[in-house]
Structure formats: C-alpha cells, structure tokens
Picture 1: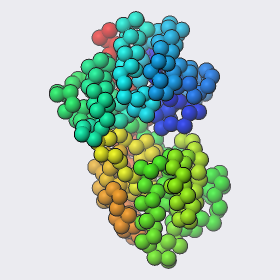
Picture 2: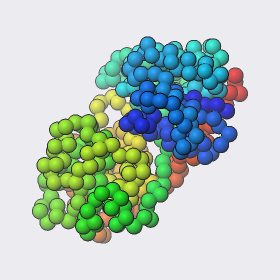
Picture 3: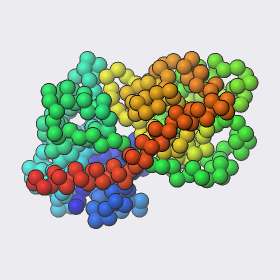
Picture 4: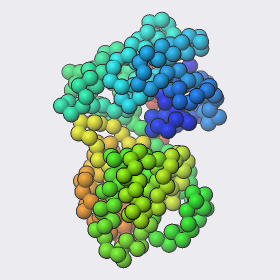
Amino acid sequence: MRVAYVSTYPPIHCGVGEYTRLLSTALNSASPNVEIIVLAEEGVRSEYVDPANSARVKPSFRARDPASYRGILDGLAELGGVDIIHVQHEYGIYGYNSRILEVVEEAVGERLARAGVVTLHTVNRLPYGHPESIDFQRQAVERADAIIVHSMVQEYELYSQTGGYSRRITRIPHGTMVNPYISTPRLHLARTLGLEPGILGRLIIVLPGFLRPDKGVDILYEALGMLDREARGRMHVIVAGEPRDERLASLAEEGGFTLIPRYLSTDEILMLSALADAIVLPYRDPPGKYAVSGILHLSMGSLKPVLGAATPRLSELYMLAPRLVFKAGDPAGLALRLRSLLDQALYEVLVSYAGPLYSYAVRTGWQRMARRHLNLYAKLLEGH
C-alpha cells in the first residue's frame, strides 16, 4: 500500500507536522510493507527520507496558497500514483477555501490515488466559527471518501452540521506514546535539558508547548501569585516552548519561571514530562473551536498528574479525570490544585485520580491508532 500524506512536516515547527511524523512512524512499525510519502509544505526546503520511518518527504505546496496546491498533483504524477491521499487539515495551513478538497477529488478522478481521506484537526461551529469553515466542513464530508476526527465533540458537531450520521465520518483518537524516559534518572534528564540539578529538590511543574496566548501562561502566573511565599519556594516552574507571543515570554521571565524559549522536539517534551512532578495546561479556547491537544497526549503517557482547564481541546482530560480540571480562565481554581500537589497525601490522591488517563494512554497507543488507519484504508480500497 502506498499512502501519501499532505501535511506540514519537520523541520517545520508545527503540531500537525509532528502528528504526521508520529503517525507515519507508527504505520511503518505496524506494517513495514506500507510505503509512506509526505507531500509537504515547502518549508521543508528539499526532498529527504526521514530515518525515523523511511517516509519520503517531498516539498509540494505553500501554506495558505491555493494556487500552489497543483504541486500536490504534480508530485503524485511523478510518483506514478498512490493508493491513498490523506490530507492532514488545519485552517492555519490551508485557510478556509475548498481548493484542497478539489485537489483530493482531482487526484482520485485522474487515478493518481484510489481514495481520498481528510483528517480535520479542528472542527468549527456557528455562530462562533468562521462562516467559510462551516461550508468547508460540510463539503469535506460530501467530497472525501472518509473524514477522520479525534474527539466525540468533533464527531457529533459534524453530524449536526451535515444533518445525519454519515458513515464517512470516523473517530480515531489522537495517538499517545508511553513516555520512554519515565525510568531515566532525573539528574540525567535535567543535565540533558540544560537545567540546574538543584531544582530536583523542589516540586517541578511544567507547562510545555508553543507559547501562544491561548496556552494560559498568564493564568499560571496569576495562580502562583495566590500562593504564599513558603509554598512558592517549594516549587520550580518550567515554561518551555517556542514563543508565539512576546508578552507571554516576558511574563514568564518576570514571574521567576525557568523559561526555555525555543522550539522543543517531541523527545525534549517527553524528557521534560518525565522530569516533572506535574504538568499544567491552563488553556483557554476560542468559542466554537473544537480540537484535541497533542501536548495532552504526550503528557498522558508520562504517568504524572495533568492539571488542565475545562476547554474543548482538553475534553478527554475532563471526561477521564474531572477532579484534575479547573474552570478555564480561573487562576484561583488552578492555585487550589497547585497547593494540593505540595501535600504528599493529597499528591498521591491526585495520582490516583489520574489513573484513567494512564489506561487511556495505553488504549490509544500510536501503533493501535496506526492499525485503525490501516483498517480504514483497506476498507476504502475494497470499494475502489
């Protein structure tokens, strides 16, 4: 089977690209006979073979430039066609127009692919979502052979928008990796990450990922300000990720955090999560925007308490471990949970509350999710 993913891809700094790489790696492990091609955004600069999964990565289009999408069809023609063309869709990459859907249809119509699949990493709803995005989502369900979403919220929202329980819509959860660094000595992890070994005597709290306004760095800052000096002195907070908002990066510095203001690889995020005593995700989501957090899935497999806001992006956390969740935009609620971490007995209770997250991490392991993709592809090819 030949599968062509249309996506951003490393070295581009993008969560969708990291997702595509992890999925491709799991597919390569689950079925070495699958040939993987990534028709990537041109930020990858030149064609290369990813040693992690043997995927052939080929620059083929420019983000938010529909006129450049012809390069995807040209790439398929150069390859001699594929079995599956699978678009990893995010509005920040493709915008709101339907040109990428036309490319999928043209690929199938010209026999450059036997079936077309689209994963919607974000599903919008009215009246909050961009009106063109609602039309795009309806068209996607009509025009692709299969639509993949990651959460039940996304799935039911698409059902409501399309007026029925379309068999083309399928939910495959975001993959989860059991953290390979859990048993690595923390001193080694700290040194590898360039952190002072002295922090290991305190409770380590980590907020990882791109530092955007929606990540809630300011909420964490306010919550820490609600703790007394003794409690604050027993904690060491690490805010780590590529700054996407200069104000928030400055806030982290003023707040006395250890700030790692750069893009972190998946391995580095996993090392930070293994080092942490707890992971904090104080997100705020725009109304009507339904997505799933990749950082949450990296965190779940680290077997640590994850404190998160009640937002659609963290809906799995809310369903599985509601006692670890606080209201979005509520620093007092986060402060209350941070205090609990400092009491050993209460910390153990929080660990037990997180138990369902750990079992979910096993159930949604990347290889399991890769096999679900393979099963979907096989069913689609039976009909072609």
